[in-house]
Figure 1 (cartoon, helix red, strand yellow):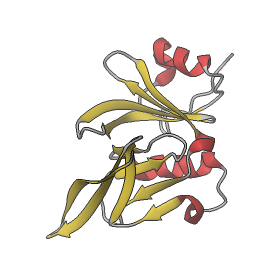
Figure 2 (tube, rainbow, N blue to C red):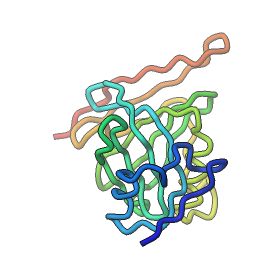
Figure 3 (cartoon, rainbow, N blue to C red):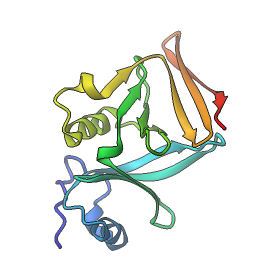
Length: 168
């Protein structure tokens, strides 16, 4: 099966067709089109920051370890309920996945990622899918809810992530 990848000017910032191991991951799941590809920073439940390759296809979101090209997580686009973003100029965004756990990430291409996710989700408007707030909660794992807070301090954005509650 041939997978359609966007031109290097739009969407694919990593030349995914030139990487057979990444193409194999995507084709294995039957996805037909790569809509976006770039490196991002992902925040783990324990508070660590991990580098990941973020691939968005016509069917799913993939998080891949860039050192090993191993798939770490695949989320069907239909499972994504909303995207949470701050009202400030920063690269943070959270992908809210109610049937699993959420994913907090950081990227210099946040706007492009959000635009692609809105378009590929089938939402008729960004208001349906995007929530803007300078404080929002996300599920870091099945039993841990965290809150991220954003403050504008003299032209820079201060970010704080705190444990909100445990679920048992």
